[in-house]
Length: 167
Image 1 (cartoon, one colour):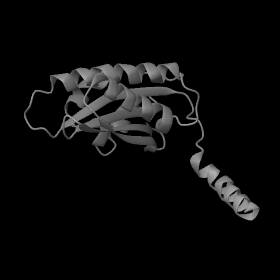
Image 2 (image 1 turned 60 degrees about the horizontal axis):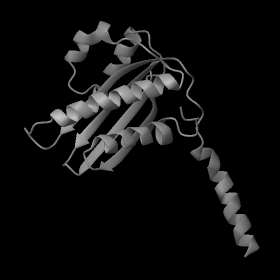
Image 3 (image 1 turned 120 degrees about the vertical axis):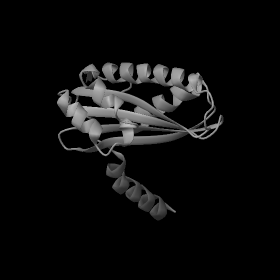
């Protein structure tokens, strides 16, 4: 019994580095917002648009509370308007972030499958390395302000900035 316990603890300790992540160095962030993929067809999505604005504000506040400086994305607004989904544009977000002088690009998307099932993604990309630094995905149940807030709060605290102090 003791032998199995020691073996299990050794295996756990060997895997611990895989679960650890280095803190993200603080810097400037170009937050390009969230994209809504509404699989419900042509239905009114004004509630979802309001929730997107709400969680975009929460994400911005969370990034600032963690010590990041958000850059103004207005100088690239015309280019942004030409992109359908900034979270999935083959790296165009990093090019725009570089234009703005940002260290990181943050984008996300919400896929509404039904009133009950939604999937959320959030991407933190390193502009210099031209790569995803962190990415998180979560499915939520319920299309409410609270479920959206919890979903993105979970992504920020438990995936993107896992192991770092919460603001």
